[in-house]
Length: 164
Figure 1 (cartoon, one colour):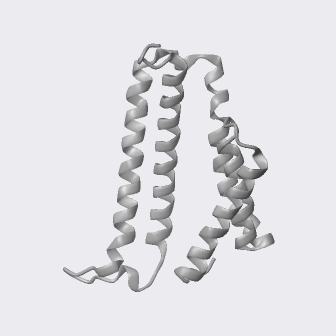
Figure 2 (spheres, rainbow, N blue to C red):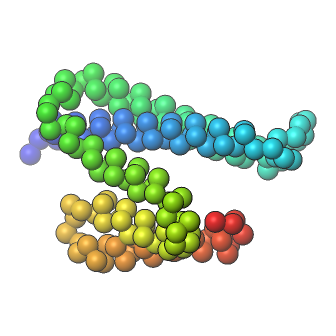
């Protein structure tokens, strides 16, 4: 076996970097827009001691820089692998698009079923989507994803008192 990755593995890594970088950039820009559109004490001028008001801005900056780094790595890899123009490469984007659509479905689903049920359903669907090539059985994967969604709900609702 050669330690050099195959063209298919290199292509997959480039696509993953581009999709992940683009998603990080989109999320950071969207959250920055929502964050800075809010009014209130969070945006007051605290001078040399910003306190916890600086944390959201630092996290947004880190997410944006991670997105830029992943996008740059993907673009550099795209230059190295000229095989990206293969017809099957567009079909490999469907899992990433499905994951984005599932996450975007949270808000409408939350209004219909409540946040806990929405997180459980979306967590189960994302786990099944992520584990579709593994040897694990999909019901077990779905249960674990649903449990992770409920654990996130419990963490934010009960642990951090964040209204969902």
